[in-house]
Image (tube, rainbow, N blue to C red):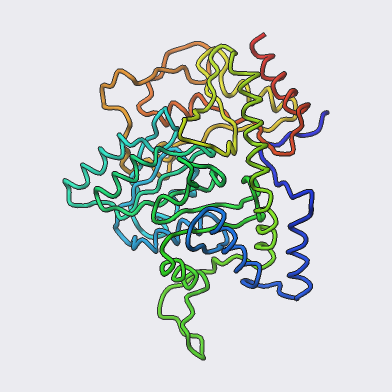
Length: 398
């Protein structure tokens, strides 16, 4: 069998930048939480994305949790969250004993619909229960329509948190995603565009709140000779070794983005003319990192057909994220659709079978989930690998 082609796997630099910083940690015997690599990684990352301050944490999930806490979210508070996302965007809302309300996406960005967000803000303002925060996600490296979302959050006086876990290296109108809201969250999980094996970063213009996050994330130990804790703390800080990997990876970020975009353009050239295939949306104001190249299907070939065919060829792919409002754990919470109840733009699809009754989608996020598939987008892929993927997919139309 041919070698495995992965969806998106770790990719260390050819130059060995990561080992230089890791070796330094070993040579100084500083194999511990915190240290020089952590401090420098925070500074270098903040400079790269153009933000004043950054806190290096154990995961992107931890960063979202700390952003919510920094925003003052507590028990019983409302938090609006994009529905089309990974569960880690929403889970920290529950950690804070707050109440999630899910917001649909739009077709133009696959991200939070300003139309649905405005409906939700208007309703909750009338109820006298405005959310403490809004979590917008930049899915698969595609930027949300930030101008509209930022304006709505400012109009209603709500803190905006950007989940940029998948969009490091993505620009919205010549500025990095993750820097438009009060807080920006990034992930360095093993499948992300750069990795520290596991880890995350919280950025903000508010240096005081980032310093507070560092305090909370180091078990909230008071400045006292003895071990004293006046607040609840967390073991969320990044280690010195892991941060060394991050410093090396940051040096090749632009190179990784360039390769991800090349992969997207290759698929676009080879697959977009196939009946029913539509590439994920790229807008003129969006310079995406194309973390994963995704397509939607509206013809006889279904996402499951592509996934099974690729698996036969030892090629990894996966479905689009299942929206949070359709998840068993979260389905009890309120959801605001991009559509009005009787909207004529709602799309009917056939689920799984190539024939049968049409299913009327009640939301954009449901449609994208039901018709979409993520194609392998590994930065170590060669042109031969890409040709192998495309050949397998094209065979389904022959």
